[in-house]
Image 1 (cartoon, rainbow, N blue to C red):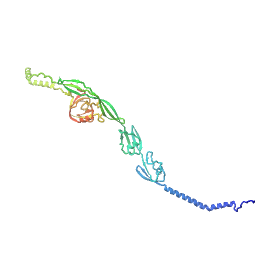
Image 2: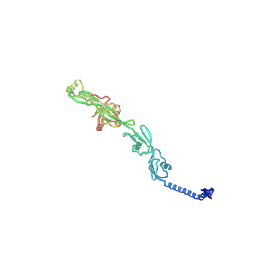
Image 3: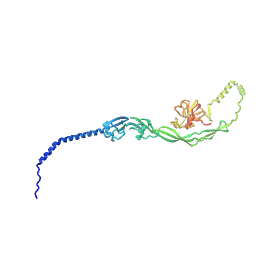
Image 4: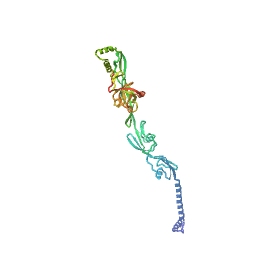
Length: 400
């Protein structure tokens, strides 16, 4: 068999390299043109995409609307772009890191600072609410039904508004009040007229009153009676009043006898008349007054006295008098101390014996306010005029 010899070519390695260099040189121009075209196309596409990424949104700040144009994607970027700042207390309709879309409406409500005073301390809070009530509820400030809020809860919120909450509390307490006994008089035919005898001694009863006290921020502002009940009944004093007619006194000497006696003793009729007048005057000169079976002497007599009535059930009245005693129906009256001294007893026509223990801003001159436990009784009493009042003194007169 014969040997195969490798085929010989007419081109050497150096000539292949020359061919590649020649092709590159001939096509360089085309490669540059392709690169420029690619860059231009990329820029054009970028411009189209960029132009299509612009957005327009409506921004409402405290009710004022403005339109913003942006190419940003999130709300906080848009606000930074337009130099709009928000505080942590402001209310925004969407999250700051939320994505925005073309045509979105974003609302920002600015918070204002207000001062809230309650329970002895003042605190500044920031709120975006419209009324005082909404602001307090949003901050978790508790307000009870009895508490008072200044200004009122429906007041519009504004910057630096001072809100004060007055805590109102109520307490009830029991107190015992004496019930004065009455004096009952019965006719006794076994006693002479003018003679009296005590058949039954009187004893005061006891009434338990329920008093409601109202406190504002711990300070007592009013108290009133809400209930009452008798725990011990009174025992009335019974007095027998004589109705038996006294025996006739011996007849006095006749005038003729007096004249005769006067003539025998050389006493003129004129001097006899003077003596008779003197005796008569001395027998009737006493200023003792008897009312309801009780005799007393009056320091002075007040005429045309006007009278009203009051009760501890009225708001703000209370049960303590100006003289330091507790009010008691059947005893206490309010007077003008310049007319009737405090602590003195008086007798009022149609009312009876009363003691001056209290005063009042409207009680001036010949005016008296009679105390009653019940407000209904006080209102029923009304106003009375033309009464006569006997001012007795610091000691109450006793029955004859």
